Image (cartoon, rainbow, N blue to C red; front, side, top):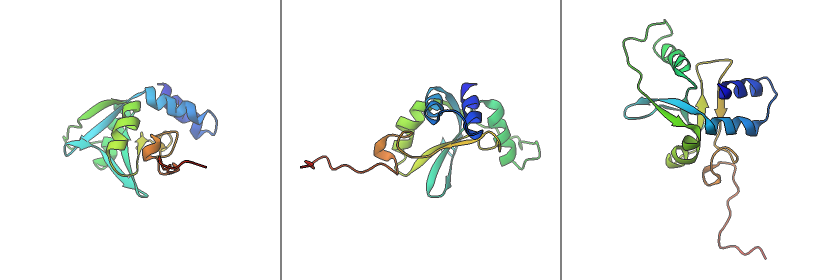
Length: 139
């Protein structure tokens, strides 16, 4: 699991942030469905698509959401398998609001946020991208 390893490196203060983003882009993440759409959460004015590196990470999230008692209340968790590049390049821009990807959010020591900034999401939807007037002539 290269993405998990890259996350661990960054959380330890080492590793290349660009390599981490590249690993997310190559990875297939599991995104639960809720009410006919992808599971998201809002925090700090950002809509976060919640993705998981494997079924075990998703199961930890499910247990935490269902009370943390180890019982999943009989609820079935449907999910999509989505390549990270598709999340970043297609899903995030289509949301129409500042959005990023939150990976393995039930793992206190293994989670990672990929915020809506340049270098992670397309510049057109990055909250820190400088707006460029296509009609400006710079002279």
